[in-house]
View: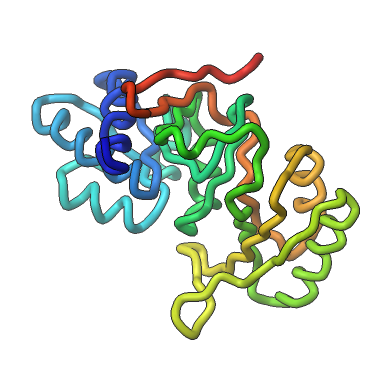
Length: 232
């Protein structure tokens, strides 16, 4: 199967966990978009759900395909979030934010009773860090924030470039109006320590380490889809 077929397979399997009446967090990214298209088919067939999108792009696709939406203010407690990941380890600690929606994705996931990750098997790693870690930051004091992030990294013996994400000749701007620094650390042996350190930096709005949020991953490979449960 090609890459898109793997994403569709993972999305189709995850959709079996969606029940009528659910309040559903709907993720962002290419795999999540395949899930939205499949979900729309089920909605057209009578599945009754209400969704909270994690990005403006996802919201637009939901509206175009007929998936009914609400907001997190209107529906602050969700039953299930289904979202993709840029990388995940055996404990289902994730790196997310490659598409720039990590803040909203984390808020929605944290408001949900359960989170299911959908991905192809190329996203599974033994140790996080192959994919650069997105760090959402306030534009004010950008250089000072970058220096503070570097100090946190140095304290954990993490090295590698930290670069401002760009769109053509201008900084990439998230749906929340923030910038993103991509940290290419290579390996992150202690995600919890890095999470704590990054949260101590005032200019950091949020980071792409999702710890303790996902309970299950549906991973598609050439032999089909398999389920991985988070370690207890």
